[in-house]
Image 1 (tube, rainbow, N blue to C red):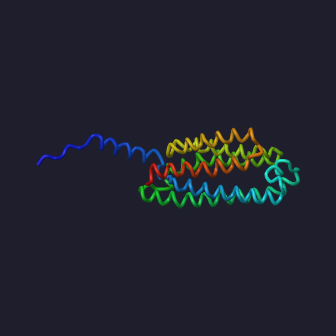
Image 2: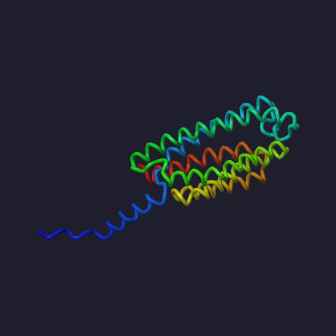
Image 3: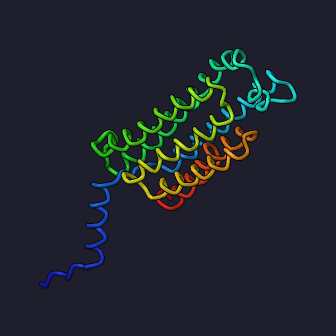
Length: 212
């Protein structure tokens, strides 16, 4: 009995999928982005509420015009808020990404996963320290734009190891950071747009494209 002729197109598709799994971390979940975006929006909302209590009728603008002593007094809250956003967002992202990695049969902490993490971490840590220095030096209006720019650069740096949408998210965040430099009084709004709605939008796009 003659064996059926293999479909060349199916074979090429399978080879391409194998090569993609070996060179790219494809288990990054879109729901991880949605969750991280919601956490960022909640953090921005809490920061807005706190600053409005601290500087009535001025809010974020009051922080921009504050004295050096006032900035140092507010710094612990801002650092705790930033750390809280990062930790909760990472926990949410890790949960959804681990779940998808198991479904794809791809180990989370592989050599590829480690390269992805390192390529993200170097610009993020450098940018975080740089933004703290900007804040302490009185350049408060540049902190949010700096955060957006360094985060966008981190995404661009990591995009070669994962899905293409991460590169476009990085470019979007960099664009928002550049615009935020021109409108310093709307820093919290741009924070919410970049870290909140940006993650949610691209997360939904990735979920609909790869996971549904």
